[in-house]
Amino acid sequence: MISPRPLPQGGGVERQRTMDEQTTAIVNRLKSVEGHVRGVEKMVEDGAYCIDIVNQISAIQSALNKVSGLVLDRHLHTCVTTAIRGDDPDERERVIDEIMGVFTAKSKL
Image 1 (cartoon, helix red, strand yellow):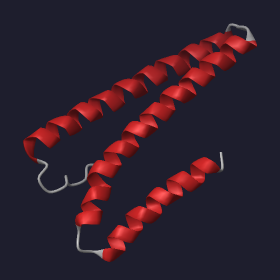
Image 2 (image 1 turned 135 degrees about the vertical axis):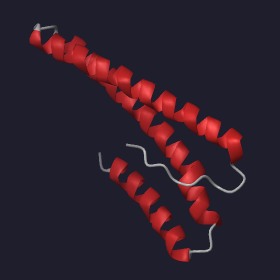
Image 3 (image 1 turned 180 degrees about the horizontal axis):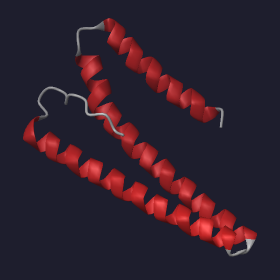
Image 4 (image 1 turned 60 degrees about the vertical axis):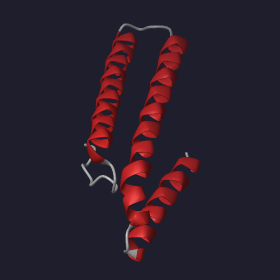
């Protein structure tokens, strides 16, 4: 679940509306991915052509990459922004290390 974190200073009602819209967009994309995964499962059960299955899996991976990008964008504009603007140097380092960890893990895939 996407954890609710405090919005950066100056966010206000408009920023909250944007966050709600982002949450809806992310959830809708995930539901779409879920439906596609079920479709691939049925293709496998029905003995569909292997390349067609692989193509569908690639499309699902692309969709998940898009969701990942949306969540990362949101994280950068909320949690990271709050930490960078904050007074706690340990928290700043923690979020920077966290982001670097994401990119390091992705590069190993």
